[in-house]
Image 1 (cartoon, rainbow, N blue to C red):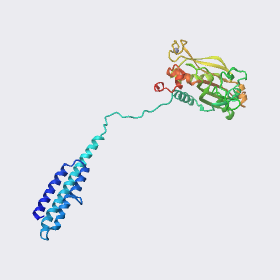
Image 2 (image 1 turned 180 degrees about the vertical axis):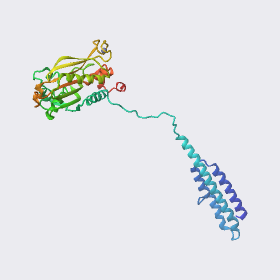
Image 3 (image 1 turned 120 degrees about the vertical axis):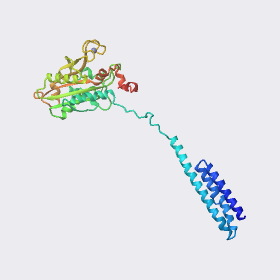
Length: 346
Ligand SMILES: [Zn+2]
């Protein structure tokens, strides 16, 4: 090829390359074009090989143009690469755009079971009166569940119809009351004693809206010198006031429990109708809330505490019943159904 032909060819390659690069739509296409024009077997490279056939005098005439053409193609390539980078970046940003005005998809926090909430509430009220927490096992011996609590062998509560006997060992039962903890504490701790003990208890009962074989009790025990029934009344009246958030009349009706003497059932004025009668209180105006009494001297003797020196009171209440009253729940089985439609209402 002559000098003139080579120069024409170079200009042709340049215009082809610049036009092709301007049309490229992706960095991938640009790379292909780079190989097509500047690669070892590329168009420009092929033309440049023709330079070797020129004479020494002719070579610089074309060489200068050749370098210029190569430089322009490289510049065009790099300019288009920048443009495409910006375009691709903008496309990616648009595709991944976050609409900060959309509501978030946060995880909802759970909450404690209503029975747990009420247990905590009752516990805190008695903490305020100087009681401390004591816990005991749910699997108990007949001794702690009955004998130590002054319950004679022929007492109906000991019947298999009422109590769950187990094969875990001889005379091992599922505790039917939290009063077992009283004995365990008094065996270890010398008076004065002031404890509360919430927990699960079990009774072999028919299931209905008010009864379930598993339920929850809250036990309280106070042992000190010169404890009176008046102090028991004062303590429980204060509890009723704080739990229902209002001053309610209470009455103590004589009752019987093997481990207290005298024993009483505490009724409170209905917190919903204030005594005038409503559905919750069965139109009686009063609610039976808990059992209580002065600790029987036999129980104190049994754990080596001298009843001449020490006396005390104890009380026990059903946590499930108090929770049902507090939240207007009409069926105890809801507490154990794990039905979210029920639980999410609290
Ligand atoms: Zn009422």
